Image (cartoon, rainbow, N blue to C red):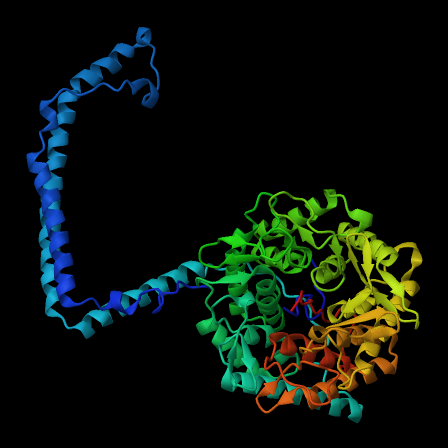
Length: 624
């Protein structure tokens, strides 16, 4: 299997048993001595009772044995006419010998119980002589032994596989001093984001840069798994920030533990953790990343235990119990979530030699191929119990986006041999173009959302990735329509640029309308925010790679300057709540994908030495 440079996982990782304070509450680990004494007395009495029972129970040898009639079952049948009488003779004459042996076994058991009883009493006496601190130290020692044994058990060696040839990673500084200056600025922004996370949020999933403390959301459950560390690894490596990369690697090796009682998003953990770990492994060759990725993947597999094999949206990493989001169309799973597992899971099977991961995602594909699709469109909701579509809502933005992206990239990742994925992509794009893509009165091409037979003339920031996707999929399209799809990508890029240019901050809103005289502008207050998303700049990057039109670099640089001017705070970078306000308020969240995707893609936009259009991929976010 070939793999493109920088791995098609560059987005968004050996779990050990968590035997910390949460698993052993303090009052259990430090029982009072009187409680211990009572427990030991109970244990001693129980052993004594068992010991005495053997003396008072009647000797079974003095009573008639019951013939259970199992000889024909447990012993091969022998025809008595051909010597079977010898078998019967053996059973009769061997009975006395069996009874004697049984009495000897009972005597040996009595002796063993007496010895164990005396040993338990001696150990109890010794325990009672020790101080509380000594007992606590012994408990901690035993816990550490269990942890180390489980780590050894889980660290089974994986089969060696060849690493792909990565091009464009260490190709030196650009000759153009202007490009070099821009890259240095982007690297400085990455350092600012990382250093503040390192100082104020280390080990937490994300950072609150104004409050200067850690931050997390329900997609990561109630545990601190260092999402920013894992998510940012490939960006650090690509930018040459190797000291920071080694910091992250050390934390992952010593602290990343998925054996926690925490309910997480299967989709988010896959793209941020498994994707981030695999990308770091392919870039650096460090085995720890591969091992962690494989062990985490094992924690996600119970999510597929549904009647249809369509995974739950969430799974508890400890219990394996899964469920779906309460708001998702009568308990449905989401297309962009169960459809955004394919690339990582295929790579897991490649690295481990275990087909289970590949089989899980291929089962999803086969199921989707059999289903009828309204107007050829894939609805965003599918019930994992019944295998039926939920609400007929189709979107190339949130809830649907990365499903289409992964179909195309599965084909590219296979060196264009996965024609099944390509056909599904082409069929879907044809239906999307027919039913969702329109031109506004002002001439802007946009992608709307299909809701129960009605087109909503609204486009989300997340949808803006599609411009780059159309360009990426142009080569190999049906009916020699490469030029058409490249042009379509350019039109989407222009529309998304307008959504930025028509704001005060020159940063795009979360969603924008095309109704009446309103075009590429957010109408609702709750759609005016910008949370450091990458999708628009990502499309600029793809269009630059395919056309080398300098306007895409210029647009990308303008967005970068706006982020640095309006989203930068002393403690990192924060999203803003209103891009149309000249004095916006902050949301006080530095998203992990800002380091993992936004800064990486703008860096790549000025990475002139990068070889080939397949050099990096940037998985979507489903919603916020």
